[in-house]
Each structure stands twice: as structure tokens, then as C-alpha cells.
Length: 317
Image (cartoon, rainbow, N blue to C red):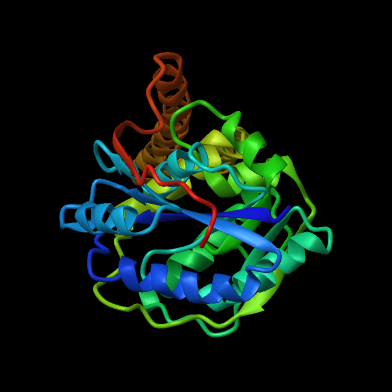
């Protein structure tokens, strides 16, 4: 019996690109058809262009494609979770919708799983992203190492493959603000990299803005790490120690030379510094409490408006 590979692609502003991405997948999967079957799940993250109409046409043409249309823009990781709940495969492969993740390397990722790894991430020697995206990737990598304990040598990307039990473990997460990388890292440490070629984007620009990147980072460290709270505690202890030492310094200076005036500017600087740190720490705690409140109110990870699939669900691809 051939194993089934489920390919999930979150889509946003990819009306002109998604058909070409599917063609690349079809061409490469034909090379693996002796051992594998495949299905494709395309998740439209409420794209403002005609992306879902393009997905609908692909579903009508190809019985192994399922289209999922989200009711509003929930973000890439929520779109991935929506796709995970539609798949049936033994192996999962996640790709981008812009053609930068090479379909030709799907076999390399699956081979890594067959060799014993639980998850295999693609590693790019030369990324074809702009400077902003590369900077964001470096910040994200630092955050993953520091906050979530990612090994420094492990490269994380949006192009990866995982075994079925990893998918099932990720689907146990029912709360809002999903973060797929955090879910993977808490499920297994048996992860490896496979070096692949990174392609140029077929058209358009990335949907990731600075605001979306900050939101993604906040999701990562507030949903899967308590280290920010520990950092806030250590900063509070440090500020208290500095305030105590400065108080001793002021008293000693006054005793040594009573004519020296106590500096108003120094006092105000200390107040502003300590007050700012207190507000920062309260804001961090409030972020955690707010997310707990939202989760307790059963805020959805995503809302599906429509699912489209061809009723002829034969296995021939």
C-alpha cells in the first residue's frame, strides 16, 4: 500500500502563482508515484484578491485537491492548523504559495523522515528574500533559541515535513494564537535539516509586514514560554538593587559633604527609569493574562467559511 503524503499550503495574495505551484508539485510527485500517493490542501487566509477562485478552479480540475476558505485573515500559522485538520496522510509537507519553496525537494524531506527523523526542515544556503525578511528571520531564530530552546544549529523554515503522530500532537492544541514551530519543538527533538535551493518569488510581495512579524513573535514567546516573566522578575530585582545602592550613595555623599545638594535631575531619572520598568513588567504580565482570558473564552484559532473538494476522490494522481 502506497503511503499518502499530505501537502498543506497557506495562501494569501497568490491568485497568479498557486496554479504554477501545484503544477510543480504534480511534476515532482510523479517521480515518487511508485511509493507514494499525495493530496494537496490549499488554505485561503481571506486573501483580498481572487485567490480562492483560483483554488476553486484547481479543486474542480484535480480530485486530490481540497480548498479551505477562512472567514477572515487569521495568519499563516492558523491557516496551517486549518489545513492540518483536513489531511489524511501518513506524512505532512508544508510549503509556501509563492514558489520559493522548491517542490523538487519534497522527496529529500520525505527521505529524511524515512531515515528516522520525526520532522525535517529545509535549510537554504542562499535565501532569495529581501533584507527586511532576512532580518526578521534572524530575530525569529534568536527568539526560538532563547525562548523555546531551539538548538542553535537547527535551521527553521516554512518548508518542512513531519510524521503523522507529530501532526496529531499539534492538533491537540485547541487554543487561539497557534505557533506551529513551538508546537513542533515541544513535541519532539528528533529534528534534522536538509539543504535545498531557495527560488525567487514568482510574483508580488510577501504578505508579512513588520506588525505581523511582531505579532508572530509575541505568539511564540507568550504561548510557549514563561521566560519573559522570569526576565521581568530579574529586571525588577536589578532595578530594586540599583535603587538601594543609589540611596546608599546619596546618604554617604550627604554625610561626607553636607553642603552638596541632592540632585533633582538624578532623582527624576531614577523615578522615570523605575516607573518605566514597572510599566514594562505590568504590560508583559497583562499580555499573558489577556491571552489567558481570550483562551478561556474559547476564541477560535480560525473560522472556515467554505470547504471545496471534487466529489471524485479517486486515488490516481
